[in-house]
Length: 217
Length: 369
Image (cartoon, rainbow over all chains, first blue to last red; front, side):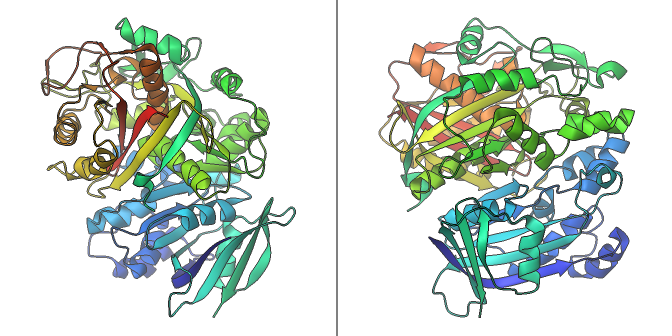
């Protein structure tokens, strides 16, 4: 069994907000001028992660299936004179890097993941196996435009960041356990986000041979 | 226990490059051959000619299905059979680009068939189906240290007792998307790369590459230890000027390599500042180690480079001869840079290092088990 307590949690469901809405809502949370080149996902994930004030010795596990869909679209549209800025910001780990580079905040362990139907299991397994004293599991998605029409981006925009510590730490908001056993089942990133956002308990199979138990204080 | 204090067995590994498998690639590097050729960075649409190393028969232009699939199938034929992706037999797929060539072609042509291999989850799911893997397939993408992250995460599942054997697969195949991005950054240009050599301006080449590794709890002639990561988060595309990121990463590996005589397989893309910083850090951590880099021949195989070059390092130790640093002219950046190949029988370890955007660093120690 793998187990951690959830010591801090930030979630942000952007719902039907446009990229402009998100920027206007969050830009005041960043230093002046810092948001000019930040993406929608960078703003959302950065805002959630910043609230947890990550330290260098904390592992950051970043989960996003499609990551920087809008920067990808923009970069593709910039051909035949491709944009260097959009190339940089379109890479998968960009959202976390936008915050951390802005802060000049090094981190030893940074594990950017993508995933599909079993993404919650894969991201949690990565976070719970980290030997770092504390791990932050963060992530999110941003809604694309023409990539979405082809099924190549998320249809939702959201972000989360959860600090995980060894079970038993005082002041826990909740506990998450991965237990071997169970039959078929799957939980994607959106489903995991919804559980966090609603502080909803869960006990069930999230991947073949693996159950998740999520409890809240 | 910290990862750096633990060791994992490497039961098998291999790669596919423009030269062929690890044996053919190693032999070509020993002969000093260069796989890079000038190719217009926009493929059929032309653009400046830049040094690219494409798998023979493959075009920079995307096809549907992708014309890199035969190379993946060749790699898959090398992988020991093993019900991969089933419970207790996880797979970690790593890379930096996945189906971005398909996205480029989709945008350019509007042909929906290109969408089926586009984006990370879509591409990986198609690959999973193509190769007959079960559902436990994790996707790791951290630019050019992706392969190292996959090896570390795979190791942790073994150390935690969650798996006896784990398959790590890494691949990156070039497209106008990738070539265009690096050309826009001006480091992919008309010059061919000269890793670890002083000259007026830096330049990189890019290459196709795919590799696999099977990590095991019990069997294997090789061992990986001292696996180390460090992320500077200083700048998107450059490093701290004092080299601290390189040093912070290598200090962990140096501890694991204490008492060993090692040679150093560096990242060495051909950019000047990063080359100097890496050579300086390597000299500090491993003062007696000769340093080699192979991207002057293979090009930078991006997310797969850590495992492509690991497979070549294994072959180098197996054969007893290490290929030198291939490419271009100019004075070496330090006395430890080995431009020529050398006999490696007097060494008992290899430090393999990779770097990436965001000041990301990764390294490990390869030894006989």
